[in-house]
Length: 278
Ligand SMILES: Cc1ncc(COP(=O)(O)O)c(C=O)c1O
Image 1 (tube, rainbow, N blue to C red):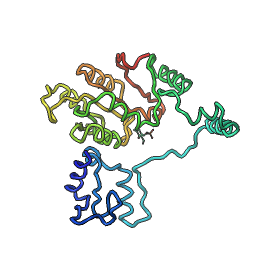
Image 2: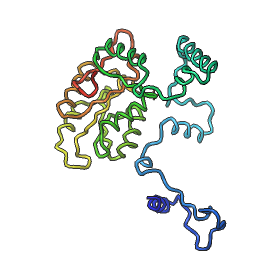
Image 3: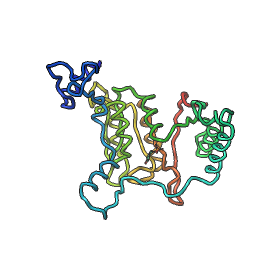
Image 4: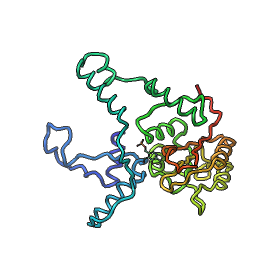
């Protein structure tokens, strides 16, 4: 394995060719002249750079200081005071008794699926959104949730469909877990809504390998980053019906589900997935 990686590094020009004579330092296992840098995996090398980093590089290269990047939005409001107070109380209790239970609760492993009171609160929130009976799993952020979801429901050779433009990390997660060839990119209509006629057509493909495979996973982002479009109940129900009939997963990133204008309602369809039900 190591020699294959080293060979790949040599072929990619990222490693120095080994020298013919003895090592400069005979006691070292390697010396600088014969060190061959192994490369990251082909999947990672074929993964996009984050648009945030690309924008920063373009602005830096321009030498201008009067340009603002809109590639990343960062909330400007602080966490709720109650959350800050609870965090401060927890760390104070741990500091007061470093060998006690309060300290252990902070630094040792917790329940794998998330803290029970947090999961109970999430269950209530899901039920209020019409998604009763589901078992929420707590992850360190939505990107981790998305990557874990892909690893759970798709194999490396499965096709994953998403609509461009969409949240850049979704593309990157597919590229990293399945490889660039796993990506099937669907179009938006002129009104920036996903073209569900296209989705219907690709889901009805018979397969046969290569890009002709029907997607096993379809990804939507609602409201969408970057377009801001909030999908209608009918569109979401149609996407759910199409994927359900094709035996494909529908994954919806609802990160901005509460960022809707007054008078509009965020909606998330539910499938009869026994795996994730309580
Ligand atoms: C649509 C969408 N999903 C997920 C994320 C990332 O979420 P997290 O920081 O919780 O991983 C973002 C952040 O910009 C996002 O826009």
